[in-house]
Image 1 (cartoon, rainbow, N blue to C red):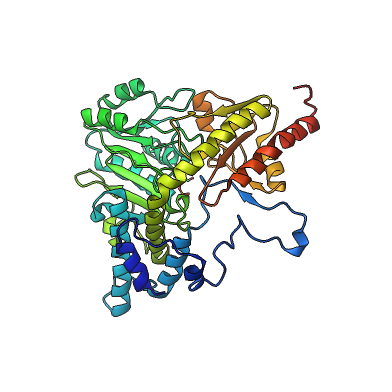
Image 2 (tube, protein in one colour):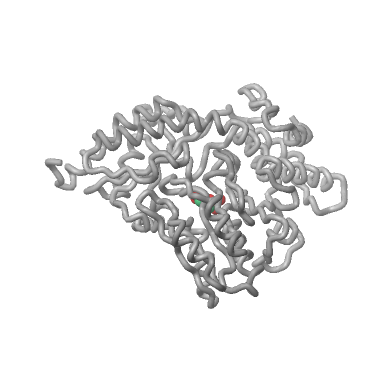
Amino acid sequence: MTGWTVLGSLSAPIGEIPTPGRDSVAAVSPTPVNQDMATAAPTPAHQDAPTPVYLDAATAVPLHPVARQALLAALDDGWADPARLYTQARRARQLLDAAREATAETLGVRADEVSFTPSGTTAAHAAVLGGLAGRRRAGATLVHSAIEHSAVLHAAERHVAGGGTAHAVAVDRLGRLDLTVWAEAVRTPGVALAALIAASHEVGTVQPVAAAAELCAGSGVPLYVDAAQVVGRTAVPQGWSVLTASAHKWGGPPGVGLLVVRKGTRWESPWPADERESGRTPGVLNLPAVVAAAASLRAAAADAATQAARLTPLVDRIRARVAAEVPDVEVVGHPTDRLPHLVTFSCLYVDGEVLLHALDRRGFAVSSGSSCTSSTLRPSHVLEAMGVLSHGNVRVSLHRETTEADVERFLAELPGIVAGLRAEAGVVGL
Ligand SMILES: Cc1ncc(COP(=O)(O)O)c(C=O)c1O
C-alpha cells in the first residue's frame, strides 16, 4: 500500500471505504491489527493478571485500523514539507489537500474552512481567543456554559487575565444548559463570542446546540462549539460559526485537532504570524497523523450509526445495573439525551482515586470526571455545576472494540470492588 492508495481512499465517498481486514492491514503493519492495550496477550510474567478491558474512549479511542493503515502509508509518502516546490513536497501537498477535503466532506463544510491543529486543546484555545480577537470591536465578553472542557475554561481565564469578561451559564442537574439564562446572557451588550460544548465529555449529556445557536444568531453573536465528543459519533449540530474536534476521540492518532471557521466569521489568529493552515495554526503539521485522522474520521462517521445502535443499550445496561447493584451510588447525566458511549456514576464513601486504582488492578481502564482538569482528583467543575455527587466518580466510555462480555465483566466485578473499598475504610452496613 502506498500513500497514493491512501489518497485514493480519502477521495472515495463515505461508505465506499473498505474497512480493512487483518490481511490488508498486516500488509503495511509490522504488528497484528489488534496488538493494542485492549487486547494484548498477557506475557508469561502476567499469566494471572486479568485481561485488560479498556473503557476510557472519552479520553482516547484505540487506533482505528483505517488510521493505522493510512498512518503507515503516509509515513512513507507524506514526510516532506507540503509548502515546498519539489516533487516530494507536491506529493505531501496532495495528501494534505485530500485529507482536508475528506474531513470537510464528512463534516459538511468547505475545505477552506478546515484547519488541522496539534490537538483538540490547541484548537479550543484558538477558537476562543481567535473568536474574541476577531470581534473585539463588538465587546470583550465571552459567554460559555459552566461545563466546558478545561481547554475552553483556560482560554477564558487567559481572556479575563487580559482584562476581558467571562460569563458562565448554569446547567441543570442532568447537565443541560439553561436556555433561559443563556438567552439573557448572549443578548447582553458587549458579548463577542459564545461557547457551548456539543455534549459533555464528563457526563455525556447532549446540549441544545441548535436552540442555543438560534439565540446567538438573534443577537448577532457567533457560536463556538467544542464537538470533541461528537465528531465521528453522532451528527454534528448546525448553526455554529467555529467548531473544534480531536482525532484521538474517534480512533485517529493522538496529536491532531480540527479547527473549523465558517466563511464570514470574524476570527483573528491569536498566534504570532505563520503562513501555514491559512494562518490559523502555526508550525509544521504532523502530516502522516493528519492523513490518518482524516481517513479514520471518514470510516468512523460511516460506522457511527451502527456503533451508536450497539453501544446505547450497553450504556443503558450499565446505568440500570450500577444503580440497582451498587448501594449509595448516583448515576449522573441525562438518561436519554446523551452520547451513545458514555456513562458516569459516583459512589458515596469511596475515594475516587482509590477506586480507579482498584479497578485498574482488576484490568479495567476507566477514568474519573475529574481527570481532564487535574492529575490529582479534585472535584470536577462539571459535577459541581450540576449539583450532583462527585465522590468516587467513575466515567465509563465504550468504543468500537468494546464487547458485551467486557461490559458484563465490569458489571459483575464493580459491586464487590466498591464494597471491598468501603469495608477497608470502615464503612459497613449500607
Ligand atoms: C470536549 C473536549 N474538548 C477538548 C478536548 C481536548 O482534546 P485533546 O485531548 O486533543 O487536546 C477533549 C479531550 O479530553 C474533550 O473531551
